[in-house]
Image 1 (cartoon, rainbow, N blue to C red):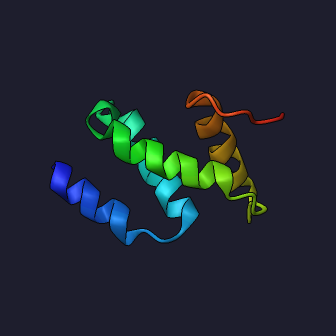
Image 2: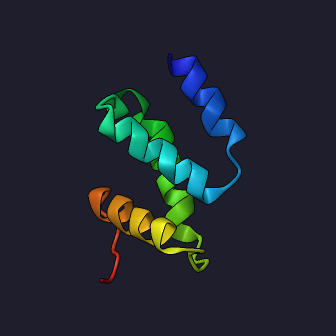
Length: 74
């Protein structure tokens, strides 16, 4: 399972897809297996100050940023 998720994470170039993968791993409660990979994804998302395309991506980015200890203004 770890290899499959790592391959999926590498294949996702789009920020929204990466955030959805992180959110899914957290909801399935298996994110502790992928802490390093999630940290890399969250660092790249936090450093990327691009505007969110829609409400879904904005809400997901806000939730994940808050859950992982990044500053996210309401």
